[in-house]
Image (cartoon, rainbow, N blue to C red; front, side, top):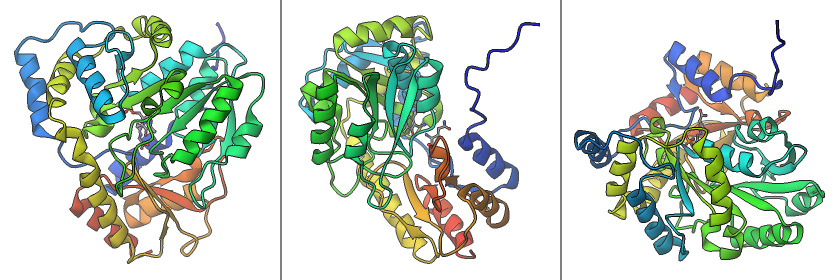
Length: 381
Ligand code: PMP
Ligand code: GLN
């Protein structure tokens, strides 16, 4: 029989699947996998239902429903003062993960290297490797959630093709500042690198901070694939819909991959989102809504022995458990799920070769009573 080619030999089932399955099996409170447990905005689900009733049920154009791309271009113009052509520079994708995968597939040739800052969202490295590339891993500084730019610079080789940036960051909630943009600019210009910018938490950024999107900087955008997720922003992660913004020449190549992979995305959702986005409050209100949840969770957690790190954005906040246990984080997270009924994500899962750090990630995008129930159980630790 033909031997099976193991294209991703080091990869197993993702930690998100494992922890969610365990939470369901044990009926534990799930603060692990990043998804909200509160209802999404009914105006949006109504708009999608209306689109179905109005017979928007056939294939959308390959690049996406044009009115959706147009309203996104308008939003980008008003938020980031950037002019993006909806015809040639935006493509609607089945989720942010797919946009990142397609961007990497567009640019990578076998042997190319991509710089990945760890901890990193778990799809990046397999996406690089399945395309014959090599991930060059650079650790972030978890003490102050900063990027070690001298280490990034030292990781560049003649084979480096791109760097993946993620702000707001999963799992830490770190965000890029202006200083990071200056460092990034100097490295990508000097070495002529592409940027894959994962901005799925664009509208979940707190304390009045500004999102440092690549879309703000024409020189950076000129070498970027900027990836977004409607699922994360509109609390419907199961919809798996997002988009990628890139300059026309890059987008032309991106679409060549996309058109033979999924071709086009769910039409009624695109029609509904295009309508919903006309109300700017639909996304401008999200920062305050999620910040309140972050702050409530931080207050509740003061009753426990966890030491919370800061979180400036995303659905997530990390916490140290040195005062509670010396177990490795995976063992600790599994035990807390089994014995204390709260599922979380061990931060070592965001490293290719693990870490010895004693950190777990909590998702605070939950109903008030879910957070209360979880913390009540965690106070027993
Ligand atoms: N990037 C990061 C950092 C994420 O946390 C997620 C959420 N799963 C994604 C990308 C992908 O989003 P989507 O579900 O739209 O594929
Ligand atoms: N982005 C989500 C998280 O970090 C998980 C998505 C997934 O399960 N792949 O929890």
